[in-house]
Amino acid sequence: MFKIGTLNAISDSIYDHLPADQFEVGKEVEGAQGILVRSASMHEMDFDENLLAIARAGAGVNNIPLDKASEKGIVVFNTPGANANAVKELVLAGLLLSSRKIAQGIEWARTLKGQGGQVGKLVEKGKSQFVGPELKGKKLGVVGLGAIGVMVANAATAFGMDVYGYDPYISVKSAWGVSRAVHYVKSIEAMVEECDYITIHVPLADATRGMFNADLLGRAKEGLRLLNFARGELVDTPAVLAALQSGKLACYVTDFPNDELLNVDNVICIPHLGASTPESEENCAHMAAEQIADYLQNGNIVNSVNFPHLEMPRVEGTFRIGVVHKNVSKMIGAITGTIGQYNINIDNMLNKSRGELAYTLIESNHAAGEDVLSALKGIEGVIRVLTF
Ligand SMILES: NC(=O)C1=CN([C@@H]2O[C@H](COP(=O)(O)OP(=O)(O)OC[C@H]3O[C@@H](n4cnc5c(N)ncnc54)[C@H](O)[C@@H]3O)[C@@H](O)[C@H]2O)C=CC1
Ligand SMILES: O=C(O)CCC(=O)C(=O)O
Figure (tube, rainbow, N blue to C red):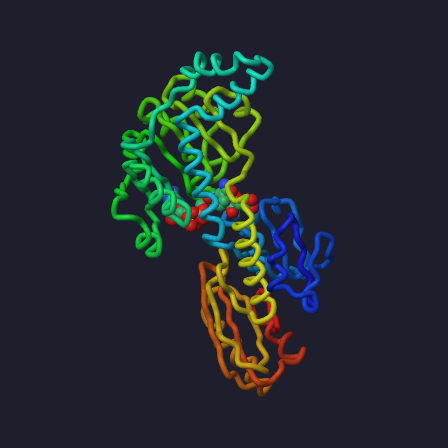
């Protein structure tokens, strides 16, 4: 029986892959081998020595201490693309909200309650405060052409927008997916100078924290509308407030409110609703559970953010050993040599590396006893030895 701890409310679709006769799942589970998480921060958590894997039901992994997990040989998964459509749809709403003063108009309309038969007249008299431009023909810059950015860029062309994309690390999959109508730009500075609207879709990491700072916003075209459905810390709040004051920014729409941004004119704060649809919650939970179960039961690693991709179809009735180790020379020889000393024949084996980490998965018809496992653990550079 495997134990899986949950740190956030998560869709019941996890049970498709975590049946009750094989997995104990819950908030209070002690000594869990796996953790399922959405946005809860794990930075202050101690990792129990039983913990083997963390699955983020979502895209951003900035709530997980990846270095600490890697050091302990804990595999961290995310669910790429599983909530991208939900975010895309809210971004499209965000474009309209940033232009047409819809939120401000709705707030104002509420104040007319109690005016009886005058409401119609007051609406017609007051509506001119809420005039805003159309999207058609305007320039939209999309920063980050991953799962979400590509969908947003393609969809915005249907609004008749002239769309520009910036992503120096674009994947082949994304490049195939971007509409030919989207222009590729090589510099973010050129993008902010040219575009009327910018939407941010990059992960939060040391390299991207505060990327929209006073310097970049200072270059913006007068009256830029900025949308942030990625992470709050990608944008420097004091710089945004100053740009709104000076008129450089006409509007800031964010899915990540903070105290300084709330109730500021021309800031639209949404309470992190990007992925809050039943469809995306189900997709993410389903994918996260499938990946963590496949690792705990078979040693396969799919969609990890800190480990290499390694999948080996399992021959029925076989035993498996997974060795998490440093990516240094002579490891494969040391591992296979040790197993050979115990007369275990290796039927199938795969080894993959990623950065400083490597992982070797071995399949055999012979079960490995405690003696083999402790000999493997004794090899210098081995971080963890598992059986499946
Ligand atoms: N508001 C919400 O509820 C949600 C927010 N997110 C946020 O959106 C981010 C993006 O999500 P996905 O598109 O699914 O991720 P993704 O991994 O598919 O795409 C990210 C893209 O950003 C690019 N990138 C990285 N550094 C860059 C840089 N310095 N400049 C330009 N491009 C850069 C990458 O090459 C990649 O193509 C997530 O990391 C997460 O923080 C994701 C899902 C839901
Ligand atoms: O689980 C959520 O609602 C947040 C989704 C998110 O921010 C992400 O996937 O990065």
